[in-house]
Amino acid sequence: MTESVTRLLGELRGGDDEALPALVSAVQSELKELASRHLKGERANHTLQPTALVNEAYLRLIDQREQNWNNKNHFLAIASTAMRRVLLEHARARLTEKRGGGAERVSLFDVPTATEEKPETLVALDAALDHFAKIDPQNARIVELRWFGGLSVAETAAILDVSTRTVERGWRAAAAWLRTRIEDES
Image (cartoon, rainbow, N blue to C red):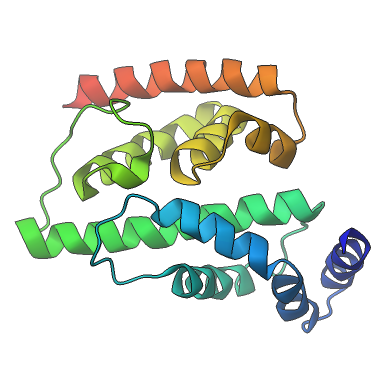
């Protein structure tokens, strides 16, 4: 399996347009697991199910054909980010419908994952995280994978190819920075 994923990633880098659907098919179960984690805790009547979230993320990945995915974990991390973006767009659309587009700032890190947050909290975190990513890209990825992807420290470390200790330190540093940033803006 890993060999076929590596081969498909090489074919993608070589410009083979058929390699992306084959790659997605090869890691379909892992993509659905990621999608389930993203959707865990969402409202019961959420319009997206795991398969639909994978499909939406796939449409975004098609636009990133020039992306040089290093390995399977790197590809899954990018897919997780695409899923995050899809869910954020849904949250923003819901806010627009619910409140006429006004997203208020709220405090974060009071619950275990972002999927349990209100749409306005997700929007606030996304804005702060975008800013943080310019300052500290690796720790921003840690937040994306842990907070939005619902991944454990060990799973995040494997995807980013770093130690669990690095993930733990990065998580604490990012949480402190983001909390301060969001509280200052609210």
